[in-house]
Image (cartoon, rainbow, N blue to C red; front, side, top):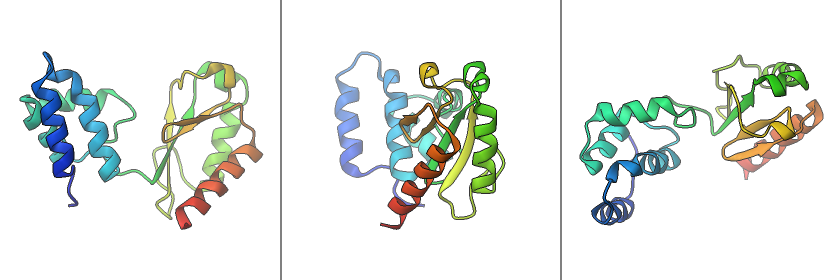
Length: 162
């Protein structure tokens, strides 16, 4: 398995931990750093975070599994969170989700054959004024129609080839 964090990252986190009263508040930052480098957070990542913060792996796991944008299993290069809240649903989100499934040839929770996209239904993205919406990585898109989705997917496929 690839290195979960660089030595420099670990040193920076240790320095930060030494200067704060409640190191526990860095759980998400550390999990994100592991995920950014590795693509998801394997068990070894949970153990690394726990060791750095002086916590048990269970304490870190409880946080890791609570937040839907921390991935505890492999995902595609571009995780797509498709909003399935009532706001998005009432503005065409269900049809948009179906279009994504057909375009990517995957069901919710699955990863496309090329390994680029994982489709993850999400109860709310917090962008109700831009419904229907999706979030890819840390960028939200909306309001969307099928053509918008096709354009975004094409752009990401092109980016992946560059």
